[in-house]
Amino acid sequence: MELAVVNTSGSETGRKVSLSNTVFGIEPNDHAIYLDVKQYLANQRQGTHSSKERSMVSGSTKKLHRQKGTGGSRKGSIKTGTFVGGARIHGPQPRDYSFKLNKKLKQLARKSALTYKAKENSITVLENFTFEAPKTKNYLNILNSLKVADSKTLLVLADYNENIYRSGRNLPNTRIMMAGDLNTYDILHADRLILIENSVGVIENILNKA
Image (cartoon, rainbow, N blue to C red; front, side):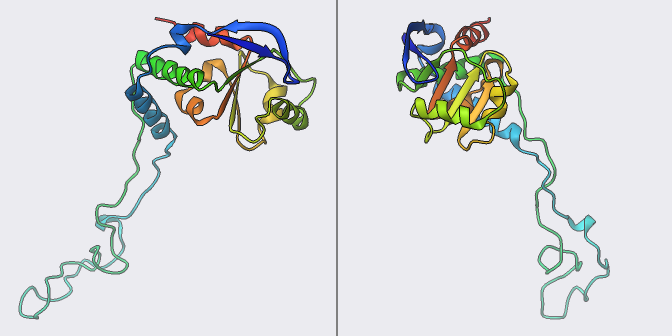
């Protein structure tokens, strides 16, 4: 698959980039995508939720009244969850939600996500550029030139660029990351995937590793 390379003004440069079929043209695996996205979201959870069980609640341990003969139900402690101010029954406790996935499965998921973007014609290849200084207005001008300012965009860089990153980090619906950090969730979450010209080869090298 070939895509025209555009400049920061939105005009075609006359160059084309060939996207590898082993990365952008495979048979998508939806279950691999599901597992990878599930892992990504699980890893974002702090897992610090906590509630007090009976052993953690302050209160008397004295039996409220005798077991039988009152006509009411049996009550063993004022700390039980059925009373106001009592413990939480089977409440959440701190835990780690993260889990591991096979490396090849994660590669398959990213390839599947990129293939979907390629099929939807949602990929733009932008020529290599940089800013002399961080300036949000300059980054916004590029998005306007590409006519994607109102869309959720993901800009993929070959390597870290401080000025580009700081220029776009405050814009809503805009994400900037390096090719090595590319993940299935962010690919699918974006409406438009903007690949810097020299990032295409980096992505293909990473995802074609055995």
